[in-house]
Amino acid sequence: MKMADQSPIWHPFTQHGLGDAMPLIARGEGARLYDADGNSWIDAISSWWVTTHGHAHPRIMAAIREQSERLDQLIFAGWTHEPAETLAAELIRITPDPLTRVFFSDSGSTSVEVALKMALGYWFNIGEPRHRILVLEHSYHGDTIGTMSVGERGVYNRAWQPLLFDVDTIPFPHEGLEQATLDALEAACAQKPAAFIVEPLILGAGGMLIYPAWVLAEMRAICARHNVLFIVDEVMTGWGRTGTRFACDQAGVIPDIVCLSKGLTGGSLPLAVTLCIEPIFAAHYSSDRAKTFYHSSSYTANPIACAAAAANLEIWRDEPVQQRIDALADAQAAHLSLLSHDPRVANPRRLGTIAAFDMVVPDSGYLSNLAPRLIAFYRDKGVLLRPLGNTVYVMPPYCIAPDELAQVWNAIGASLAMINDDS
Image (tube, rainbow, N blue to C red; front, side):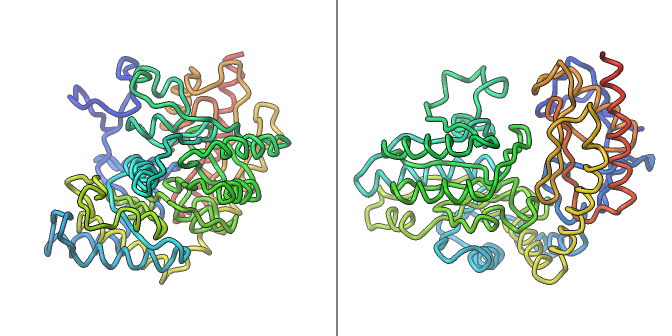
């Protein structure tokens, strides 16, 4: 197994002081990752939830190669290019009619930053400056200052608390407590905040917490009654993860602003978009340059990334992607069911292609000492999994073969013995 030794790289979400082994990956294909010696690992979390159709999908790779030989980069302020225009038109076509405008950025975090700035800019430009943002308990929206501000406070961001702005938190709609959540949102919206931001149906980094579609629909209706902008963060939930192309589809919800990234390019290149309704764009449309939406990055709408995303949307249009998603969802349910009665397994849950459960251990939470041991155990079994503390989840690419998925779940079943080792 090739390892990255004495590297100068500072890796994300990695405590280098623990000295954990770090495989050196040479290539990816389908649901697998390979090192230079041919050792392979099944990518059971889609390389941080981004890879949808599999690594190095031929159609996406071909689009990247072709575009790279024509136009690699272009300033997007005052200029445009065909891949961005094609992609934006297709995004408008596949999303609900009220969403009429597409703003490009580079990552999930920046797409949320854009959404927050759009919301505040809208109220400012129409002469009704609202400043408060409502958030859902246990949420996570990224690691920039704005996105940390609208996420759960704790180990993720405690070092930067002085930089974060205040928000109002709505309790998570745990089973049986949904009405308390809705009542809290109703009361908070009556105070005329600028916007409410949610991860629809499932909270990712917050522990794969799932809530029903009817609650999402009610939350949207409450915001509409009080004229509060409704922002949905579909960065992780989009592109089929929850069983439908977008999680909002299951609730019949049309947001005012929606954030998309991760699977937008099939997971091949970084790209994000923030879509919004026409009134938000109109509030910034003026002959007065002071009303310009002042946000950008150097690589906004990079042509190669846009070409990859356009190829991804062609795959959705031309190939039986939904059938693959449905088959994977059924297989995930079957594997999860086999473990659901084990006393070491708590709260087994599934939404679309995402399956999760909590290991019953005294040492729970994100900083559980069990998590690093589990990661190493799974790696030795030829599987890439990264538990959230004592929460184990499986979110593979849609191309994963039945025997590969079985290997993943067999490794998970074997790892339950580690709980007994700790007792």
